[in-house]
Amino acid sequence: MASSSLILACVVAAAMVSAVSCGPPKVPPGPNITAKYDSNWLEARATWYGKATGAGPDDNGGACGYKDVDKAPFLGMNSCGNDPIFKDGKGCGSCFEIKCTKPEACSDKPVIVHITDMNEEPIAAYHFDLSGKAFGALAKEGKEEELRKAGIIDTQFRRVRCKYPGDTKITFHVEKGSNPNYFALLVKYVAGDGDVVEVDLKEKGSEEWKPLKESWGAIWRLDTPKPLKGPFTVRITTESGKKLVADDIIPADWKADALYKSNVQLD
Ligand SMILES: *[C@@H]1O[C@H](CO)[C@@H](O)[C@H](O)[C@H]1NC(C)=O
Image (spheres, rainbow, N blue to C red):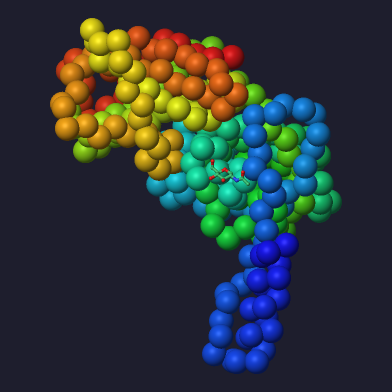
């Protein structure tokens, strides 16, 4: 309500004073999508970005901080979400079933996409900016190019639990620049809700869980005047409150810009 009357005020003001500019009207976002798994489909519009059959961003990364989203387990089946989907990074890693309803080249068969990035100029209450590969996967066989040419399509979507192949475990990346007083951790490949709402760390021999703060995307950080000493046990909490502990997952001799694969996973 407030935003539509604001837009109206802008239009009126712009008409009266030609120097006033409000930019393109913003589409009000839908309510946040949360970890509810009912069967209702919601309406969304979808676009695509990057290479026609690629994973989206040029660097195969995105606003969640994941890298190599063209490789397993995402395999390029990823997407940007607008605010109620990306949720300031909280939506990173969440999974959606999406199917295309218009135009005619749509197959109507759902595919599953992972949120790895955000879109900044939403064109609908819910807007998926898909990788070229995921967008093409919504087409009838042989009509991928025709669908990509349409550019903007009507879709339906619903949140689903993330499933990964059995050997895909929750994986941590200690981010570049981390040191004993600043520890930044990216969490990825979380099955189930897929998105993480809390990360805590415990130093070996300590009983105290230290909460990390959201940094950006799927990256969590801990700033501490007292140097941290590994190994660290890491506990994550997902959106619906499931917790999982990876014991001593970060070794005593941990390094910045290094990947640590756990042997634990949610379902
Ligand atoms: C949607 O989620 C974001 C990120 O958690 C939060 O900041 C925002 O307040 C939420 N919006 C609503 C309407 O709940």
